[in-house]
Image (cartoon, rainbow, N blue to C red; front, side, top):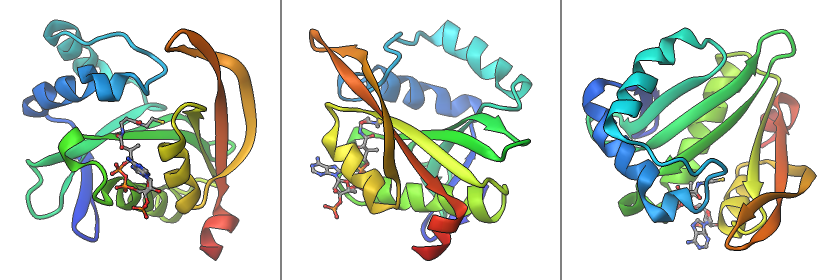
Length: 175
Ligand SMILES: CC(C)(COP(=O)(O)OP(=O)(O)OC[C@H]1O[C@@H](n2cnc3c(N)ncnc32)[C@H](O)[C@@H]1OP(=O)(O)O)[C@@H](O)C(=O)NCCC(=O)NCCS
């Protein structure tokens, strides 16, 4: 478990799966996800059992530091490249905890972990052009738009740009 202020992230236990499935299938979540495959219980258990096999793709739950069973959201650290020391990240907050600062604090937590403990040199994420709230949050924690995958994200009947945002260790140290 990695603790930051009053929150933490930890590995996913079997008893977390139901709440994570609900978060993924919630329309206010999946509308903002690139991959909109809905998750069923059996498929999810299979996915969870295989998680440990992929060393370059890690999934965690975000929880309260003092009540680790209480979940705030989920976190993914993907395409981890130890040769070049970079990775992609993303997270989603349960609907009842949104708009309360947990998203921002969770990004601060994961950046602290990745730059100061996991020895990453550059961290990036991608956000759809129709999700300006999320983009604003990423800018607040230091990410800068570095490029776009034009018209590569189909949602609500049209193609949107997929925005790439990056943060280097040097930039992080200056924040
Ligand atoms: C996007 C998400 C991770 C943000 O987490 P959150 O806990 O709701 O965000 P916070 O409360 O920490 O807000 C941080 C900043 O984000 C922006 N923001 C977040 N929600 C907002 C909203 N509904 N309207 C306007 N700005 C918003 C604001 O700039 C805010 O800063 P402020 O409080 O100083 O104004 C969360 O809302 C979520 O999981 N949404 C659904 C799934 C999703 O969009 N995932 C991201 C895909 S790229």
